[in-house]
Length: 302
Image 1 (cartoon, rainbow, N blue to C red):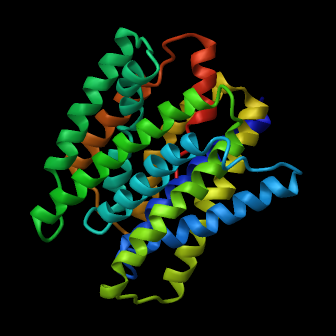
Image 2 (cartoon, rainbow, N blue to C red):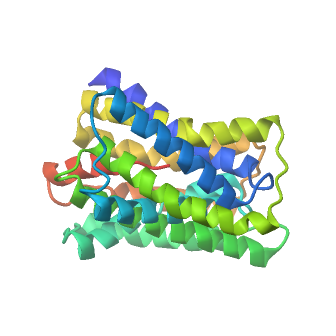
């Protein structure tokens, strides 16, 4: 079990890097172009991994599941995340992402008939308060743009919550790697379509850091993080692995301060702490080991 814990920590670090790289790329290329390029590369790599393992990708058999997952998790979530990072510091974006477990909890009630405990609902309420504080502390040059960026990130959290809940449902008959690869392929289609739609107004200003960031979001934050996480879950066990997802916002804040030299205000710390605490409470299993098992295997952030 112990040898899997460093892998779980490393996976959340890889995923948090997506926010840092997205911030680097915020003014280098339009978010829809970035999203399209990212998922074309990621989908190709995931397909190659499946092929190397001697497995086929059943794109026609499970087209409906892959389409829904790709639209919510790859197209909407990533697109809104990169849009939000144009106006919101990575540290604050990472804190807002802590609301994802709350979205999973609430949507799980309606989609898969989960029954959260009172601790889970308390966590949901706390996270809601924390996100409100974070949005109120938006401090970019134009507050209206900051508010729009915050709103995009909140909507992204809801979209990823839906992706995760549906992933729990579909993982009953599709293994996680196949589900992620299929979603990446179908998610790349609308992502590329949206990217082509923005071409008439295309403005790209890439430098060495931007190119490295693009490579990272397409590989490290997508394929590598997924492989490291699933290996860690295999060694550690699903029920012990799921809580490590709450390290994501913490890593993002640390990297935002150290790498991007972002300043985190008192309201940010307060809102972030409340949101993370609520996320931890909302992550408590509601249906015993089986529920936690689905969560750990279905929640792949990126």
